[in-house]
Amino acid sequence: MASGKSIVLGYDRSPGARRALDIAIELAGSFDVLLVLVHGIAPPNVVGEEAGQAREALDDMDEQVAAPAVAAAEAAGVRVLVEVVDSRPAPALIAAADEHDALVIVVGTWNESPLRGALLGSVSHKLLQISARPVLCVPATAPDAS
Image (tube, rainbow, N blue to C red):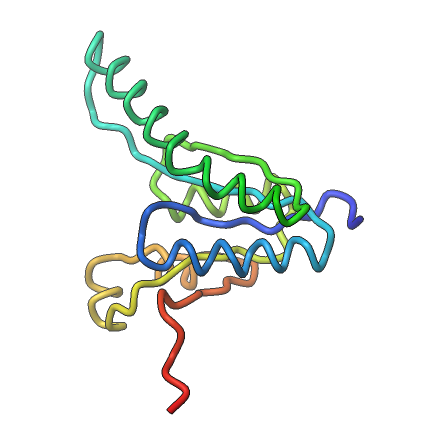
């Protein structure tokens, strides 16, 4: 096993997340490294009791989102760690990649146009701009072989 290395996966309910998970599991298994599932969420700007309720709801949602991904990784014999980070997704992925010495950051895409991604700030587009580590962008659907 590669000491201290990992594959970091940005995981959510987006259309590209499942294919990205499959690729990340394959990579982590091939290199025999930890798979780190990262879900970055910038919580709402609320204080007091509402802040606690918002955090609880986000934690519950993250558990539901991550559970099937963890089960898939474990079924493939891949060690997996879930990190829910109170940050926007791209900075959360960069921080996790640095902390876990990632070989690559894997994210799904959902076939948006490059212009739309640049204007609206897609996570994959942002990572390609700011990451010093390799970024693997996995499309939501496989291209037609025809």
